[in-house]
Length: 468
Image (tube, rainbow, N blue to C red; front, side):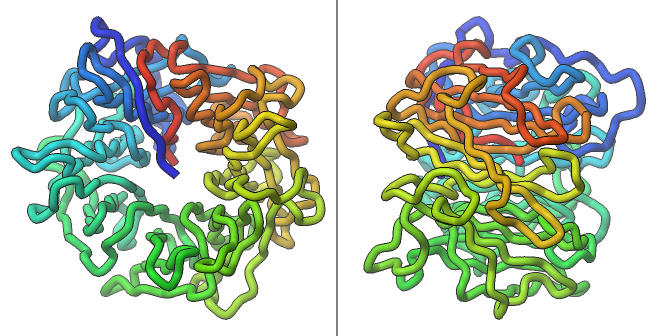
């Protein structure tokens, strides 16, 4: 689920608020490490940021990792008015609507792909664009716009979804960008002057907004998943697209549903598993699913997930999972993967941003489900809200805690932190970071940053997107 509105102070339109400490050694090569210092960083979208006097132009806030995690003191704010970034901040561009990280130019520093969902192109309103922001010793700066399909219609929303990965097994990171009627594939390696090595429009994969990617069959190539709703399958049509060595092949999972997802190895067998969030309540037009939402796990293998397998299904009425499935919880509307406790199995964070906390409506929650040799289950799972002891803040109506989630090791201790967006917090959005330990997440030393804490003004929609 995507979200909306922000404001940058007029004096900060260059985008650089606090520079990251320069790396002193060779860059780490880690995906998501934008300054190459060996600590992963996190990029957070604020698609409705005002840039100077321009309303809802959009911004991206980058929080740089360190041995003590992240803080407002180590950040960069990037807009289309930042030095070297293509374009100009214009009203309603939604720069920061979608985000994806990866080392595109093979220099060892992770780069960031940023979607501006409704960027105007010439006299065509709301077409949308995608821009690569380059990593370096001081973090993200400068950029290069990606070539765009020439036949997009107005309000096409190009760059509604972006994902990175080596899609053709040549060792270079590629990019895929989605829009209302187009899916675009950009082949790496990328050049800072000329852009991608090549690009192709994949109209057969069109009519979709979302995309995520990962290796489902262990061959080193990344498969791509473009979930979208179609008439007759309102739970979401799911297929994945992989490289055969000579071409891309499409495999349907006719019994799978969901609109959000991730790929991660939850059972440690060396194959990525497809985790789908099906957050819609069952109804006449959509008979499948569970009240309040559910997730399903389709386990990978040498040929990818077998369409005939029986997936693991987990919801808030599954044994061991806190809470209960209630109408409109939106359990599964955000999905993140990472190893929270350092046991070698990917764990899954599930956002339910419309979860009621006591009598407080739509306050939101995040549930952590743990991976194991037998796969994902509700055993030992934990749920967190802003009323959980040690979590900063208080559950309030429409905070939407869990609107976005990411699990990423920000302090290099081998355990992933939870970064959770509360997209409506105080009307402008906020993120909460809980640290990973051998026993799971701890609320000790947790961090809370609102849009105001990172120098953003206006409605913000801070944390409606977090780079995966």
